Length: 318
Image 1 (tube, rainbow, N blue to C red):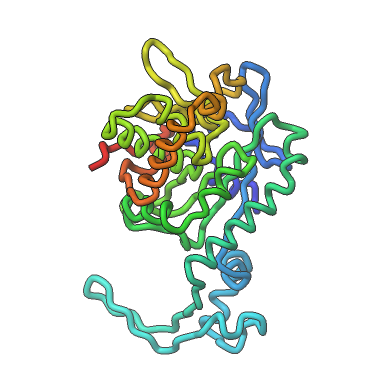
Image 2 (cartoon, rainbow, N blue to C red):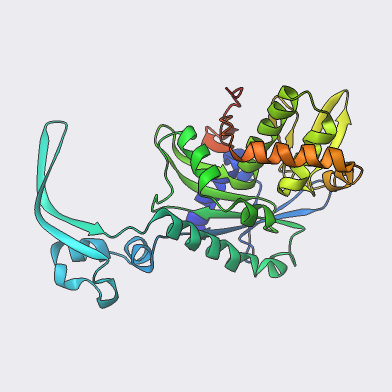
């Protein structure tokens, strides 16, 4: 991928102001050294629905060539691409007649499988990336728009019902950003780990309040649902849970992506280790209840606007 395109996606994931601090590199693509002396690396890659889709996006003039000359479709792309000749499109009172290229699109589950395989391939190189950086984030560019969504609610449902949560949380990347399109906002970057964490924090917080349970049950639910390495600390009476580069304090999500210091808080898996069998049973029932509950509290997005990273506000669950 061209370095200018990589930097464009870096800006989408981190905002213009923070992205400007990163320096160009290779394996990973960008580096940021903090005041503490630790280094954050960012690797940028692209995802496509098929090799044919990648070719349409990357091979110069291929789309224009086959639009005017259908016989120019490459042999491996036959069956994936079809040229519709003499089509008329109408938009805002104007009609345009010409050839259109129709591409076969794979089902969503196949697209997600390709995405997971792509992340896995990059994770296999993580030890190489860590030779230059202490922690590494992954930015996945969806320039094809295969994962675009019409609203934050749609994305929340998609994240809950289709996305392989266990695979994402088990990734050794600190965070995985999916750069795609939200129809009302345009180009956005969705922090996948952060979005899962945010929605689960809000869900378990609500469930524990409704059932008049304790902090142990809240922390235990998170620990047994994939966030065992998250840490908890009490700061000025506020219960703060930190996972990767995010901190949740029951009212908002805090961006600490430049803070690469080791977290001194207690890990949630250590907290739940003190639970009695009766308390563990209550925790498991909370997790079962969470499985059927869609908490619509917003998606953790980065929307670069005038150099500022703006995050989607958290709405109180209904």
